[in-house]
Amino acid sequence: MLEWYAGHQRDLPWRRPDRTPWGVLVSEVMLQQTPVARVLPVWERWMDWWPTPSLLAEVPSGVAVREWGRLGYPRRALRLHAAATAIREHHRGEVPADEETLRTLPGIGDYTAAAVAAFAFGRRATVVDTNVRRVQARAVTGTALPSPSLTRAEVDLATGLLPTDDGEAATWSVAVMELGALVCTARAPRCGECPVADLCAWRLAGSPPYTGPTRRGQAWAGTDRQCRGTLVQVLRDAGGPVLGTVLRAAWPAAGSDDTGTEGTALQRDRCLDALVAEGLVEPLPGDRFRLPGT
Image (cartoon, rainbow, N blue to C red):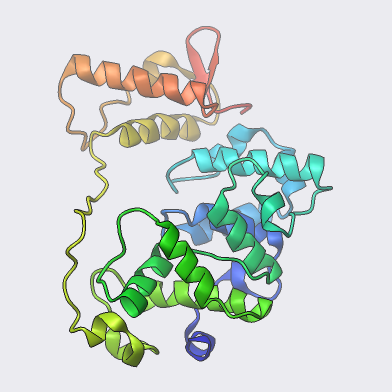
């Protein structure tokens, strides 16, 4: 696995020798449920403008949301801003190296803490994402796909597979992730290119189809996610306060499957209220709205 990764890894800026712990942290948050191709230009722009957490903490949180672009799930931008502020105020502007301390940062959960400890600091940490789960399911347990939700058994298995050496363990984790992203893909695995094909329990069993619980794809058209994204995009494009009448006119958006006027208005108002409650949108006097602090 490690030999395969040495010859096949993608050249990504957050993996290069000159990477910084902050750059790794930003990449891990941006890459959650978002493809590398979409993350790259936004990550590079953030690193140009805010190469340290202290620099991001100096700007209003709404600027981070605006410069999040179209990565989706803009609450991640707020969490990164909050984490940057905590790093500046409680850690002298330096990203913590150990998982336990990383988990105390706003919005940083078990996966992100482990990934930063491993990929930024070379620690032996259990990093389990969708790609790792799929590789483990096939190569070790002999099933086509993992269960819909992460299980304790999967985490324990990943921990047991880690090399004992810190540096090798960190490389192992990113190697398994890379194998899942490039070769052991969900829909069309390229088993002929897999470095562990001769050891893969699923392949040796004849590649049986998945028979577990139904896996449902995420809908988009007409959902609250689309509605929220539309409202935030209007504010992002404006760069300043927007009249409520203008903001409300943006929904329903093209492609929405919600055609009922009353239902559309209720959904829009509910989503706007939620955005305000979460701190993603700031209400102003005179029925105006803006991204926080912009």
